[in-house]
Amino acid sequence: MFNDALLTYLETYLTEERKQRFLDVLQNRTRWLTVALEDVYQMHNTSAIIRSCDVFGVQDVHAVENRFGKRLDKNIAMGAEQWVDVYRYQTTSECLDKLKSDGYQIIATTPHDNSQLLPDFYPKTKTALFFGTEKEGLSEEVMQRADGFLKIPMAGFSESLNVSVSAAIIIQELAKKVRDSSLDWPLSDIELLEKRLDWTKKSIKDVEGIINRYLSD
Image (cartoon, rainbow, N blue to C red):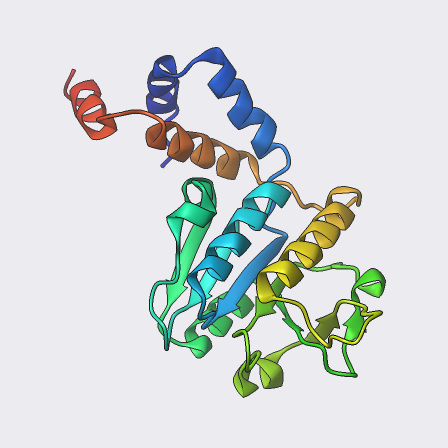
């Protein structure tokens, strides 16, 4: 159960500006869109995508780390990993099963000819955007279980973009479409409170000691 009193107490350790900043950012946060990364090899790409999610208001990232392990470069994420929830999976199946059970449609980002163009795509239901490895793209399992395919229109000779660049373009455009819509895209009241508590804890030094003293009073 959420502890309102604890949040109120811990917020006394924050400046008014910090508390207001959290409220302002949370007003644009969404779980209507989520991002899934399948075995992205380059650490800087994973980190850059997490940063894009933070910048454009996507709260959750799901990372399949079957082949390459943890791929987060904190120097590039520049603190974004504090504000975005990253869920890690050992297998693609585990990630797909979780997202589908949570009600997400699976959209594979791929330059294949049968993909829908980004300007024409509208996320009318909760949408998980899958991005794959730099050279090989998404696995056959994702392609087989996907509910749809999405690509960025290209006007040059290159057939694809760097995965972190593609993710930034797609996340930015779809997040704007969602926020401009009448969809039920914002975080719920309880989710807002939970993130306020989470972010407040991450902003206070020795927060566990402070919480222990508070609970023992």
